[in-house]
Length: 412
Image 1 (cartoon, helix red, strand yellow):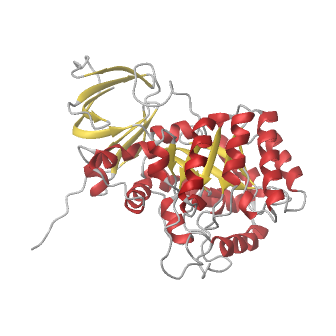
Image 2 (cartoon, rainbow, N blue to C red):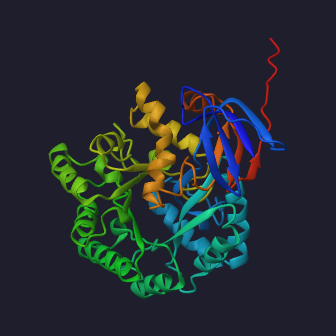
Image 3 (cartoon, rainbow, N blue to C red):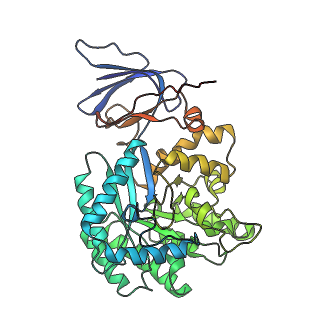
């Protein structure tokens, strides 16, 4: 199959792509069609690698208002509401909602998803469902599952045992939530346990770290130190880290040296965290988003995630990561033209590093799996500015999504 006139990742000159047996076999400025070869002319539209969702909670997706709404809009009331909802979980319930959410994500070009699954449930119902779905959906979506202790490891009954059970069931990543533990000592113990468990089972680590406005929340320094000293390095991700927004600059400057040495990844969820953070403030109100620009300038890998889709922490959200990037650039004040042009990397290449994907299996290159999307715009700047739809999503040469270009009729 031959795809012509594609602008790959904002390339100035369009080029052609040949796909055979689900693999890129040629990428050149001009390719001559073979006899009988199917040809698709994309007329200079933008082609990107598949979008990657590096932080979402699919087990809670589409539960907003059930059993009640989070009226305060705080992280902690969201946890309370979810604690009530998860008592009624069934495998069928989780799978039905996740199927809907994943198809919604696919509309927006997403082919890889790291989902945090709550394991503070003695029956591990959601985890059982997600492990089944990982297998069922593998031809369309790569699901990477995090064992996430929503109510803590040390502060939840049998928390360590539940995490160990989850690791044995076949999760991909070990999580933690140090800022929700009862004490500073529990916080440190939970991180020590999570990193040791990941090392024992040869798994990745992704911690909900310091998702709070408290400048005294210092789980990040512990996590980075463990990543450095245990040799886990880029196998570790610190998600949220919203407390860095409140750190004094002298402390953050000192911390940045450790973060750079450790090699860990960061995930920012700007859409949700601008909603959840600063709730205890009157005025001025903190934005509560991690220091994306400073981390990026230091050469540290940062990706963006949606976090929540219509659940107790975010009553809105479609799963479209374009919205997350659009919001994130505004709230982090990363609005320079070059910053905007490169921002697609937060949900593609940077996210691929976060998920620890094989660099030879993602992106455009002869011999790599033919996985890519086409947007209805010539550049990322225009796609981002005007919310261009994903016209096609291909996985191993097979089309997963097809959208017809639309031409609005303005009647004035």
